[in-house]
Length: 224
Image (spheres, rainbow, N blue to C red):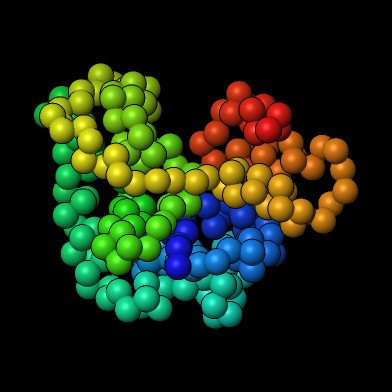
């Protein structure tokens, strides 16, 4: 058993690019589960399904959940209350990493932090897992926390200061972006479009719909 935990942004990226059927093909070739938390479900299904502009996308993702392509943690016996409690603890730590003046900066969303919490619970069950997450700040928090000062200073146009002493707290999490997922799909022959530019097109499409991937990283993937 293994699992990929999907954050909202990755699923929205696939939806906006018309790639949800490709996600379904990936699931068919994956010996494990595609999971979403209740917080992610709220962001991508429950809330947008009542907004005319986003209703169709929400229904498409809901269909994946209804058909078992996506599953909730309860499919593994993990209770929502456990995820919520763990999320609260992680949120408190994450949001005391960076300050601007005397104000703490909120670095992560409820949905993103719930993915980290679910990863912790899967690890306790000895289930290898990745978090499919496109958002730059949360990945930086986990992979390169020293870079948060620059990112948040540029984002807020104010001097941000990193104040957390133990920068390794979030280093245990492992991530994959939508760009890398479509790369895997391409390499597995799951993409039906026949063109020598299709990989490039897929990678750029995911980048321009929210995946934090550089042009240099795209060039590397194209050469692999």
